Image (tube, rainbow, N blue to C red; front, side, top):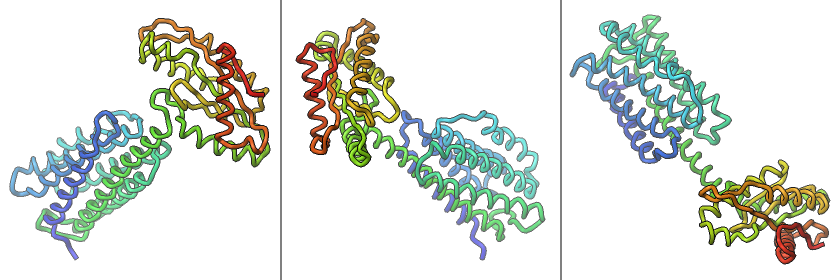
Length: 383
């Protein structure tokens, strides 16, 4: 059964236009996540197939040379978009050489449809292989299911183009023009349309999954310092507490509060206060082990969870941290040096009754206030 080629072209053009509008709707220039390139690619694909539909009505230089140049540009833009999405780069010539080769080549082959078909299939197949390699190389940085839709679409396209090229080389009927139909031509348009749908849906899904992951990160991290927020700290403490009780190991909490932080905000402004918080978060993060968890749980309060650490070990770590903060180079937003100190409270898990999240945090908080009452810039515990 043969499909009506003008109808198939209209379907490809319509689907391509719809996907252009979908990707254009989610494009945010500041995100630089590839959607701008993909939307432009699908827009050019719409234009290219629109020109194919006008074959015989307008100049062959437009419906053959320009249309095929636009088509290889589509694949180049898809590559650019994937690389931007993955935050990777490739040599530009590897992506854009077909755009330079196709115009003179297709002008030379204007009256040779068989050779044009072979050249078109080979170039698009090479571009599809490059896209496939980019997808495979970026799997580690591209989470979610969207990439698999793109992968399947590319495999289908490569198979379709290979079949079309082999059929042309073997002299099989590949269909000559819009009024001539063949099995090869029908399969080419049907599979191309399906590949377009799979690939476009995959790109849209990849964009959505990236946005969802970004939102999850924002929900669990403090925007100013990049540290886990209170919610993330409580979740982490719950997991570590359960593991500690299960394995009968040590667990210590460290509550850190910046001394006279309100005075910093009042005297130097909130931007200087923000600068102090960012520097403080770096000081804390730089001196912790991989298994430790540090987060900002309030205005100038930080919580550090130390698994497999008893009170004595935590005191040594806290004192080292206190001294490093006292010696650190804090500056205002205008570059003025600041002397910043912290008060640190410690509490170590001792008994089963002691082992609730609220009790641990409350006791560490009380120890921190004891450090405040005893003159600040010191480490204290309740025991």
